[in-house]
Length: 246
Image (tube, rainbow, N blue to C red; front, top):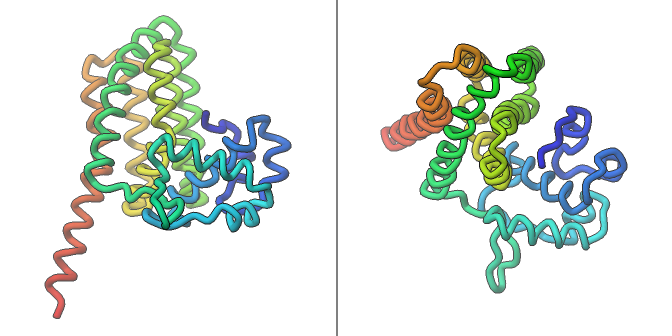
């Protein structure tokens, strides 16, 4: 589960001692260590294919090797870390094909959640204030150029309307993908670096929820794919420039 409190999230800054965080968080230390690794990947402090050494990470986080070892197992089961004989534990490579598969599943889940959430927001309009509050915090993150906070808030926004949908199966499956979503979006966001368009799109989604727009499923798909398409275009342009240079 994603930490909702900003103070806790900031203290989860990757690869720093986490003793104080563990005292406040209330979750198992193993889960905290797993999220620290995920946040490091999202921020580019760890790279796809990079080897992780249990004892070194334990020393950096100032925890025993046991929660690190257990966190590795969790992330291996989720496909975020890989093991190979003689090479130990490595970060998954996150190839384009894998990213597209995760995105496809995410879109399918969020379309269902959005459709169901529209009905809920119609009956309980006050619940939409939670989405507005998240976007307001996004605007604050923009003023401080806080990319980590924007990433957290983006994930929180989508988590919130999945929760509001009342569809427990969709919510459970979405949460199982949450760490992949955090990593993929974080790395895409770092490539684009555009607060304004992210905030504007989330305002647009709120408007759809509020009006009961029947096109909400298409809007969700477009919203999720927009950043992926932008990153692909940027990469193509970058490669073209490199190949064009002597």
